[in-house]
Structures are given as structure tokens and as C-alpha cells.
Image 1 (tube, one colour):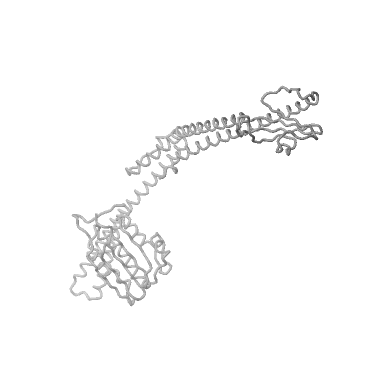
Image 2 (cartoon, rainbow, N blue to C red):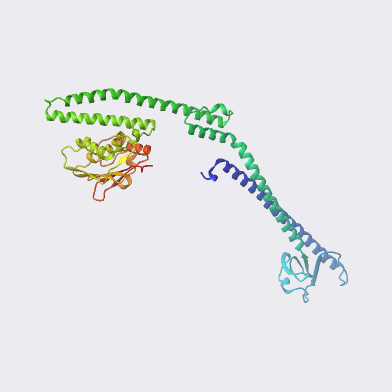
Length: 430
């Protein structure tokens, strides 16, 4: 899980971004208002002083009359005479302008140029604002440092607050993880206050209780059904065996009894497999034995032949090499019975080729085939192919669940020559 997806990290980042954004917005507003107000005050003061200077010159036209001001340089030109100011200044109309020019020390510096024009006088006020600009830069640096400091403070507060806010949630998650690892349900409501987290813990307790009861009922039902089914199956199997031992039994009834015997064996294997699935319990043959897959394939082909009936279908079993897997024969038989049975049922004519070897069993048929986009969907519970007849859509779902339990892989794919190929890959030995 990536850190940014954790709830606590979202709280921290949100709080830090909120603090940074609010501080930066306040800083930008402060700088803007300070610069705007300062410019308005300075411009107003300079225009006012320039007008006072012109009024002073009207009253004191003598060249040696001095207008007492410091830090401000004035230049006045009488209308109609040759100007004594730079030519670039003369193009400006009355108003305040910001320009750059060479200062007393010979460096380019910022100035404010204030221009006054009437029928008698053109007056120019030239004011050095480099000190003002330096103050603005220093203010920006100071405010930027303050923004960074407040952002860091917001981040620290975010860490502290998130730890406080997320403490009950983190405790709930820790208890749920511990309960998941141990597999033993534990009531959570008593560990939390009557707030949102407490309500969530109460809802989890209710869900856990109902789920535990449901699983327990399911296990008891499966155990009871399997136990009750084994008794009549044992009676059928023993009776069938006794009937087959009769020396005067005709061939046709004997063949039917063999079919009953195969059906009883299939039912017993299916019960064993379903019990393993319901318990999520993986079992293997005792004493280090393994199941001979070739033998199981032969039994499955024999038991599934009734699905072919009188159809012109040829069945071929190719054994590339012996294959044994550490799993009960009932599980292997149920998985293969579904794959082989489907091939037999849905192949109207042609052939079914079963290949054993290299850690897998493949079943190829010449039936209606499947669409590539439907291959994975057919393993979902209740999903059936569009080209098949009636069915509950459960067989392949059971095969997939058995494969997940034992670490095997099962797949379906369209066959290039027509039909479909089902492959069951067993897990390599550890």
C-alpha cells in the first residue's frame, strides 16, 4: 500500500496544504496591499510637492530662489523655450511614471518621474525609489521565510493532530488485523468510545457474529449431509458389489450395475472434494504417497463415457510421461471429471484427445468451441457458454476453487482447428 493512500497521510497533507495556502494567500495579500498603498501615498505626495514647487516658482521667479526639499530633484522648464531636460522625458504627459536611469554613483537605478504641464510651466520631479524597492524585496524575503515557517509548523501540527485523530481508527485496524491472523473472532465494541469509530466497531461485531454463525451452520450442514449421504452410498455400493458377484447375471444388467458403481464412486469423490472446499482444508495422501494422474484419467474416461452415447466421437488418451501429484485422488478426479465430461457432452462428432504429461493434463475436443473473451467468464459461478445446452454453470467454478486450494491452474482456450482446449496444470513439487 502506497503511503499517499493512507488516511493519516491524507489528513497530514490536507492540513499542510491548507496552512501553506492560507499563509501564502495572506502573504500575497499583504505584499499587494503594502505595495499598492505605498505607491499611492508616494505618488500623491510627489504630485502634491511638484505642484507646490510650481506655485513657489510662480511666486518666486528668481533663479536663485530655493525650494527647500531633500532627496527630491526638481527640474523646471518654461513653456515655449528650449527644454533643459532629457528628450525622452518631454514625451510624457502629466502624471507619474516609473523609469530607470543612471544615478549619482553611475549605476542604473529605479526612479519615479512626476510630470506637470500647463501653459506657463513644464515641471519634472525626479525621485529615487531604490531604497523603497530594496525595502519591498526585503519584505518579500521576510514574508517568504514566514510562509515556509508556518508551512513547517502546519505540517508538524498535522502530524500531531492526525496521530490524535487516527489513534482509535489505527487501533481498530490493528485489532481487525490481529483477529484476521488468528482466525478467532473477538468483540471490538468494548474497546472504543461511543463515537463514529465505536459505531463502526459495533457494526463489525454484528457482521462478524452473523458471518461466524453462517460459516458454522454451513460447516455443520456440509458435515451432516456428507455423513448422511455416505450411509446410503455405502448401501448402494455393497448391494451393487453383491449383485455383480452373482454367477447367473446377464451381461446387460452387469453393465448397468457397473454404471451404478461408477456413479457411487463419483458421488463419494464429489462429497470429499466439497467438504475440503467448505473447510478450506488442503489434504494430501498419507505416508508421503501421491496420486497417479494417469490412473485417475483412465477412471474418469471410463465413468464419463455414457455422455458420448451413440455419438460418432473418438476418444484418445496420450500418455507422454507418468504424472503423480500430492493430492487426494478424489480431488483430481472431480477436477478432471468436469473437464472431460464437458468435452464428451458438448462434442457432437469428431474426437476428444486427452494428453497427460509435463505436469499437466489437456483435454482437446472438436465441439462448438468458445469465444476468447468468454474463456475466463466460464469459471464464474452460474455462467454457462452460449453454445451449450442446459446446466447450472457450477462445474468449472468448482474446478477453479479446487485449483485455488491446491495451487493449480486451470484454463480454457479456443482450439485453432475448431473446438476448445481445457488445461489443468498441477503445482510443481516443493
